Structure formats: C-alpha cells, structure tokens
Length: 566
Image 1 (cartoon, rainbow, N blue to C red):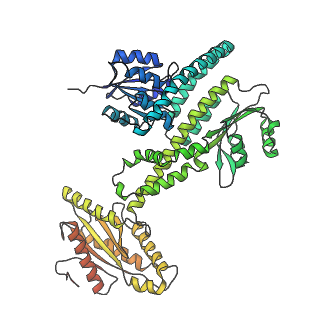
Image 2: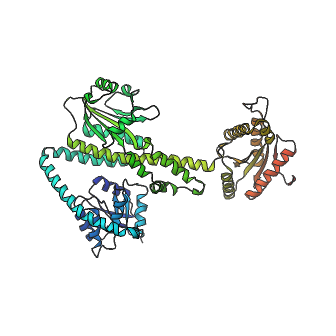
C-alpha cells in the first residue's frame, strides 16, 4: 500500500517563507497546507486535523505562543505536534514557545537540506523540554508576555491605522514593491554561492528602486581599502581599479546602530578623496548600506552550542568522523565567525544623478527589509562555504601524510583491503611495491634531520608525479613507502618500481650536488603471491629485504624461494 503523506499546516504571514517551505516539502511524503494569519490557521487546523503544525511566532493578528495555547486547549488538536519557526534566536523565545505547548523550535533562515529531516524527527516523537528548575520562571515570563502581547498588538493596530490614513497616495506603489520584494527574497534564497547573491542583489536594487548606479564594495582587510566587486550603471573600466580608503573605526561608528545611511549628499562627506570621486561621478543623492551583522551577534553565533549545530549537517556526511579533528574545525569556525571577514560582508553604494530624486520613507522600509533578509542569506552562504572548505581540508588531512603529501599509513591499509575486495569481485590482479630509502639513517646523521625531511618530500613528489592516477602511493612509515598498483601484474609492477628507482637515483639534492639518494624496492602481487593483505605486505617486505641484502639500489620481485627471515 502507498504510504499516506504527512499532513502539514504552515501558519506564516510572509509569502516568501510559505513559498520556500512549499518547495522544500514538495515531495509526496508531505501534504502542505498554508494559512497567512493565526485565526485562519486555527480554523484550518480544526478542519484538517494535521499531523504537524509549523508556525511563525510573530503573526499579524495573534502571537505564536498565544495561538499554540489555543490549539493545545482544543480536544481534537491537543496531541498535534506544533513546531515554532522564527528568526528570533534568543533562549527566552525558545523557552516561552515550549511553555506555550510547542514541541520544539527551528530557527530561520531555514536550511533546505536539513529541514525535512528536522520535521521527520518531530513527527517521530522528538520533544524539547525546559529544565525543571526554570519552569516557574518561564511560566511567569509567559504570563507577562500574554499581557504585553495584547498591549503591543493594540499599539501596532493604532499605528497601522494611522499610517494607512496618512499614506493612501503611496499605497499602490508600496504594494507593488512589496510583492516584488517577496519574489526577490525567494530568488535570493535559492542562490548557491555568496558571489552569485552579490550579483543578483545589485541587479534587484537597481530594478526595484531605479538607482542610476549601484556598487557592491568588498573590504580588503590586508590593505584597508574598499574595491568594487560588482557594479551596475557604471562602465567597468571606471571602477576596475577603483580603491577607497577603509577606516575601520569610522565605518564601525557609522553602521553601529543602523544598516542603511540614506539620501546622503556630497557636502556631508569630509574625506576630500571620496568627495572628489563623487563629484566626478556626478552623484547627487546617494545611500550607503552594510551587508553584515553586528559584532555582538557574531559573538553569540560563535557559542559552542551554535557551532555544533552549524557543523552537524557536515558531520553526518562523513564516512570516517573518527579520523577528523572536529575540535580543530570548531576552533577555525569560531575564529571565522568572530572575524570582520564574516560579519562585515561588504558595503553597498547606491545613488541618483538627478538633483531632486531620493529614496522615499516607504522605499527605505522596503530596502531595510531586503537588506536585513539578504544579510541573513549571505551570512548563511558564507558560513556554509567556509565550513565546506574546512571539512574538505580536514578530510584531506585525515588521510594524508603531513610531510610528503602522500597518503598516510592508515589510509593505505584501508585501501589495500578495499583493493583485495575489488580484485576478488572482478577476478583481476594488482601489484604492491614496498620502497625503502638506502642508508637513510647515515644520511640523517651526516646532513641532519631537516635535510632528511627534504629528501622525504622530494621522493614523495617523485612518487606522485610518476605513478598513475589509479595508483595509491603512501608513506608506510619513517623512510619506507608503499604503492598499490591496480590491474598491474608482478612484472609490470617491477617495471614501474625500476622506473622510480632510476628517477630517484638521478635526482640531484639542492643542499649537496655530489650526494645521491637511492632506493631498494620489493614487489609482490595478488593473486600470485598472497590471498590476503597481511601476507601480501609480508611478501613485498621479503622481496625488499632481499634487494637490500644483494647490495641495495635495486628492485626485487618476490618468489617462494626467497629467504623469509633475516
């Protein structure tokens, strides 16, 4: 029988958010229904009897906590799973939603990759709990919030009515731009990189507000300058080498309490270099904005609890987490979150060349909404991109020898076992080459360990550059190396080993032109010499010992006739 889809009701007044959830949960596993107000959501919940209700805590007609209490008071809905989805990330907001009856709390911006699994966990019975000793405290806060919410709602309604009466002449334009804003935000949420978001954001700013010019300015923290990353309305040749001095303290002060500095004029600019540049551009009214978050918000994000949440989606994709230095990744991530590179995403310059044209008050509100949402999306993309780099590097470090950049001993053993399994399945063969540097201890004693490390690095480079992509070259330990050669028989393995021996013998050392390094190598093959990894390594080692016994600087293939003990 076909599995019945989970019935999901999403109560959210933001159209873009509803559209995003609809796209994320569009598989046959979920049947998504929507409501734009709390009262509409309550009515639909009674009619639909959903398996799970997702709701924003900030609804236009009732707070999410009040709505949750109403839902839980109805016999037909008291066992329904309710999950809060909101951009409010404070501990108090989370606890109050749980007091109201929510099963849990999911923070915005939503991660499309992990969101369906979060919903499944709540459907399977997951429920977050408040610590027992704090229940009374949060119960009291919740009761106070009920009164405050009512007061705030009344005040908001009064302000809204007043604004509607005062600005009826601008309502049509405002409505049109709001609808466009929803489409823009939805499109920006689908960006897969921070660089792509910059380009789209600049295009949309010019389109929505009819700016004559719009520039995205990246901060070069090393040289303390601003340079244009993306520009519209200005020929690229004019801004390609465009650099402005970046005074850290000045910009911190300017954007300490607000994200936008609107409708500025040249006369308000004190820096003569910037003023001259604006005069050359013919700028009349311009607006500056920051795509970033306050430093204290970055500090909050860098808490240990938040770091683990950020890393969780990446950790679940790893096949060998035991080999990954998770603490090191966590430290690097914290350092990144606290750096200006993260919480200052960049600056926006937007201007008009007409002397009377400037942003209206409702344009500023829409611009503020767009930039606040864009900042969250941008920082989330930056965070994901940085985490991806950290995990890629960590996975590489987990299987790589730090000195030679070859695979390490642990990875070699794993791959040798996999190659045995693969060769057995496909009835194929492969060769194993064991290599040892001749007289390496004497070399270290003569030239020092630093020179010895250079030799190991040099041989590592030779092995990487002179083996096939399918071969697995590893540092077996100390001055010993190993190479797994899929699909090669023992004779062809000997040929490869001899080639490497000649290359190494002919290599000059930068610190001693008269000294030569040589290697001895032993070759064994599956299935000819052994039928398990341990025996194959032993056979290759026996052959290697024989090569050394015969005078070194040679390649020896294994045969049963060879001595197996010194």
